[in-house]
Length: 119
Image (cartoon, rainbow, N blue to C red):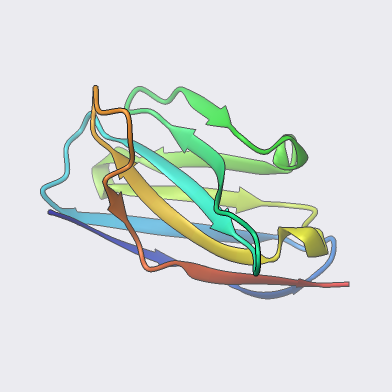
């Protein structure tokens, strides 16, 4: 099993920044892809960004491109999501997840961290 613990969420005004962190522990692998998802009230969960074990990044939500940056520190088994120029529509619970190499799904999830952006 892999345990994921997110941190860094909170309340911020529009235009502000937050950096989310997600620390992985347990049976982690150096080849895991780590991703961020979010779910706003009444909406489906959506893919935000992911980073492979060799640092290839993908962003799934057009509205965050250019504002959010995903990164990882393999030595610390930690993935980050730097969020700049935050907008009220970024308000959601943000989840960290792990995808094993060659597995077409995310099997491990964190408990989520709330991000609230006030206008």
